[in-house]
Image (tube, rainbow, N blue to C red; front, top):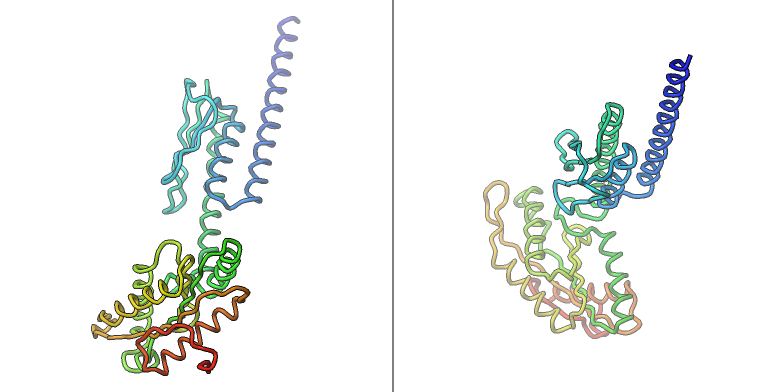
Length: 304
């Protein structure tokens, strides 16, 4: 009788332990799900993965060693037993999740393995979200900012320049006779020229500057902290670099291309539209003057 009661109490205690573990796991997974819904920030997600995994299996500590970036650690790593769970999906390697504890029963090991699989899905979703987000802001051909990102950056820089009384110069660049180039060498050659010009812009601009593909063969340069004179010097350097470079087309031909540049510097009270319009007017003046040149903002009487 005593033995039967003792066994019954042991079973009841074990049932309570299992229920507590299930409740803990449900809470951990619920918290993980909330984190997934709230963020696509990979670093935050990695931190949540470690914290949730430690809680889910009752580990004393854990860490996530990503394939690149900072290591995230939680709790005490001096336990006797260690689980190492690779976080990989197809060809993507997100690193390794390591859990440390006094012991990991079979149930906890299965839980950890299942959790790692869910973590990989979450990390892959975050990666794809970043790819899509980047594609929404980047021109696919040149790798520069697209029109949307350029417009957003322009509004931000005008606001910052007004707030801190800083200079801001805008340059509009347009490749000369681009249609004729396409007609002569073909559109693949035109694409090669656009990419080459984008490369020159990236080589020349500072980290604080922004180059964007404004549309077609037209580009917008934002130069924060740069006055009119500095903008003219920079645009002239870009112009000379392009004019002196032979661009190899897909069929092996060497294309020589030039560009015209119009420049405008922000003045008090000027709007985004007015600033770009002033740079456009300067660009038109450069085209009328023979192309392959840099023009500053014309006087009002010279506007088209």
